[in-house]
Length: 288
Image (cartoon, rainbow, N blue to C red):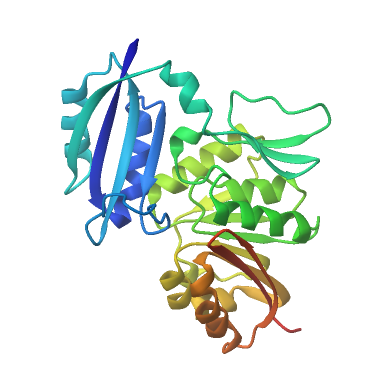
């Protein structure tokens, strides 16, 4: 039986995505992020407050000490541990966790090793990048809304773009101008790379804060934490054109009412809420 290496980094929440990227660059065949967006199952170990656990999965030949040393050097404050485990073929078992996400019959999000049926349009995202593959409920909810809302003449802002999955999907579905922004420079780099690899060099990816944007959009997609959605609400509403829409996700069902009320207080009109499990996505519109 073969062996594999799991290497876990305990890092500040704001460095989770950067850590995931570096693990991928170190050759991880898969990366798992446990942060405030992912609620642990009952009985699972409890993360320290303000921390994320980012775990890389490597083949048994990986040099654990070297990877550990590099991660501790690259990520400030990282606490890195590892163990080697027996398993059945790791690469194949890892892939079982990442199946195609069928947004619509004619549009799927897939990992690189999967093929789609003839006539199906697809966006390809590498799961090793960890942040945004279409599998998490909040991303799937945004994709579901996106498929209903994108029009050829509509501009789209992907706020907190991560891997760029939402912005790239918007372009793939025929949107006009698409801008992807994130406060993590690594995410911006990954989103830009994914856009190019999916045949969309026209998509812009930037680290500009949403508060500093000078243009407005027909559709804003914001799949981020509830507290951030509340804090950024005035800036998000300012970026919406009259008659424009915003999809807010990254929130649990029990957080939805507070987030909705915050945006309604700024003049937006609630249109619809969709849920998957304990997660929610809200659609609101700015009156003309």
